[in-house]
Length: 570
Image (cartoon, rainbow, N blue to C red):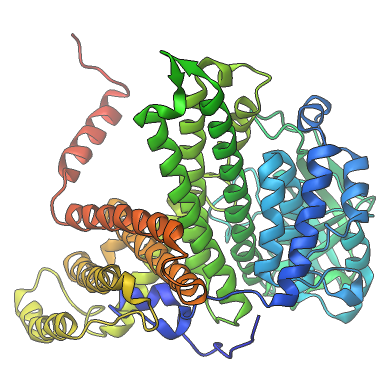
């Protein structure tokens, strides 16, 4: 993929909150080079061959581990160090290439996809991103080959989404080493070989590499989970664990930044793994609906069944477009992709769960049997809206970062007293002027195909309305906007919807220009179907920012809390 210097460019999504469609950040739609595409195709083919002929998801679930033979087999095929540099035995793929291969794991087994994601997306990734030459040479070859597996050790009994307030402590010793004490939980691969551990110290947060077998390190007991049973989810304990100075990633104080940036990267492969899973759900649905006869005809001939297959198809297309636009931003050197990564994770886990439910509904009682792959998928997939950033937290993260960017564009907002009409009048005139200017000269996606002009115009219109809604929220609530989570959810949904439309317009435009509009008729239908549905949903969310029943929600919520239950007698 061609390299473009975008290090000084702002976040695309933050620009949306400013009422700007920053075409230069997302157009043309990013694609892999032909050389990397060939490499990715070969690796994907190899992965699919192994996973569909050798690997047995049901056996892995019964054995409660994917199997050391599986790790060896994938390592031999070069599938455990996909983004690791060739000098360390890896494949050297871009973020887009890596995520494309990760789709194959998601197609076959959610548990294996998680094990692979923990190992590569968040376990190996901090060493790849922040390790010095000596650290990379020490650990990456074994991790890329599968001789060792990696883990990302952040979550604690009292610390989940509030990752800044870690209780695990690291004390720096006179010789430069660190003495580590604390407890972590829900750690995938926690009993494996190379643990990137995050802790607080007097010098700030730190990221430390702890190896299996280190004195004072203990693991267990293992958590018994609803799904992902082939993934070893562990408790990890540190009692006076001495970590050598050379095992510190970055500098003291870098730990929180390393953790957050690693998770930003990791969320992308979750999105593409879920896309792979959705493709499998669609395949199951079509196979069953074509072979199952009811009332003298195949299930697929019924509109309500056909509608489910159509919905899955357009949603896969939208999720793919969104996911690979986000990975493309990384590959092109975007300075800030944290909001795009968060939105991709939220959308993927939400639509993936809905697609699974639609597939199960088509199968009826067949999919409810314990040995059916969709039954296993129900157990495995439910965790995705929760881990690597719970979706509600991610929505707030997107909205509050967008609002913060807008507040920096409106310096008067911080000093605005909502209860002082005189001060409010003083900022009203420039606000109205800004709205008029934006309405007359909205930004457009430069390079969008003319066949998508109507949808391009709607993206611009909705971006202007997002800016107006966000500005209204700031002026109405001031700093209290941080507590308005229903408002944040809607703003985040609007931003996600616009971003997904941008991704689809960019992808479809690239296809139309490459293959011609007539030859792309099938893709055009899918793209427009997705765009229409998304634009209707964004419009609904925008309306609900002004017209909603939040006051009733709060009253009911207060009442049920006071009664500590339902409390309404029949």
